[in-house]
Amino acid sequence: MKGTAIAVICTLLLILAAEKATAQDKTGLVTQNVILVTLDGVRVQEVFGGIDETIAVHDEQQVYSEIATARERYGAATAEARREALMPFFWKTLAPMGRVFGNPAHGNHVKVQNRVLWSTPGYTEIMTGAPRAAVTDNENTRHPYTTVLEYARGALQLDYPQVAQIGSWEGFKLAAAGRDDAFLMVGVHDSVPAPWGSPRIDELAELRRQVMGLWEEGSNDVLTFRMAQAYLVKNQPRLMWLALVNSDDWAHADRYDRYLEYLHLADALLGELWQSLQSLDAYRDRTTLVITTDHGRGVLGSNWAEHDITIPGSDDIWLAVVGPDTPDEGEVRGAGTLYQGQVAATMLKLLGLDPADFGQGALPPVAGAIQAGR
Image (tube, rainbow, N blue to C red; front, side, top):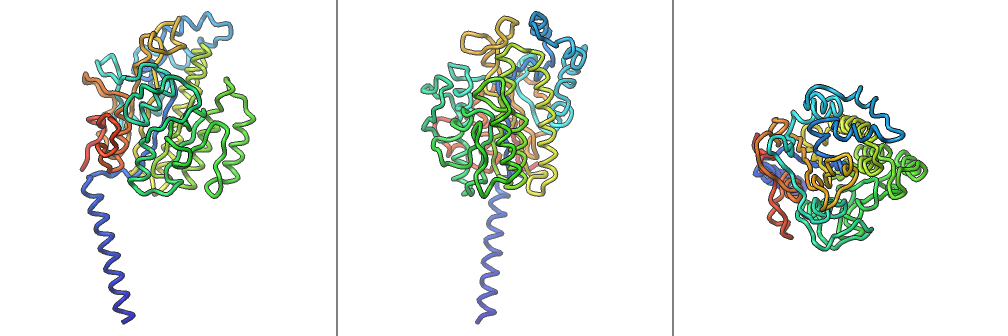
């Protein structure tokens, strides 16, 4: 009888495993993990064209500008050469493994739809799949909308640490979910609670509290990145939002030279993140990176540092999707318009979920970002 019972159990386990494999096969997707990276307030002009002379000339008037050094490092004759000098890993390694949307030079646009064009409305649009009229400022308020991170955790029945948000501004934590305990969320000066933290993560969290940011409300992106990287290696979440803010800090300070240097640094961090993902069996060849921003900025020297509904260019953003289920085509050159709210459904579809079930008036996935059954 004992041997018969063991045989029955083994058969049941095999049946369950087969059913799970069949369910995965039905999606036709390889992606098992999605990492969302946001770079706050990064303009399409630098992403697609590198250093912008219109703003560089303006920066020459700044008392402490080092724009001459930036020109030496990132200047080149063509937009393609300039952007590769500024963000070499993004353009030479990541982009060819996926698709990058939003270059207005080709009539390709990614637009923000909320009527504020500030950070919290933008991140809420990303997280919930549509603009929310009630979100009108950057106040530290948690709005009662179910986000893509919350929904995915429930739909995939993931454990608490398997969905994570780590960021350099408290607004990220509040935009990440409609309730405080939805999953692991790490704010501007938070550490990671036990048992998911580590002495290394605690040390980095303490450094974030000690190292002064440009503005009091933010923290250092490199330290935030290191925390997220350590968390990823230790806990291996299926879904993570890494939210960086220092690009917006330097822009609001009207320091174009430092903003450019930051973009070069952020590009190197993306390289480190990708190397970490490729070094771990749980992530290698089964992870999609989604990289985007919350809003654009002005296009003139007089207004590039700011963004709102009155400043042209503030609604222009960009989107990169890089992973095993996205065609290896790099920059999308065909004319068309996508929207910020489509990020949520795209993430859900990559995870094998039906975006239609997310509801809330969310927009559909980005056409062309996912090609199942490759």
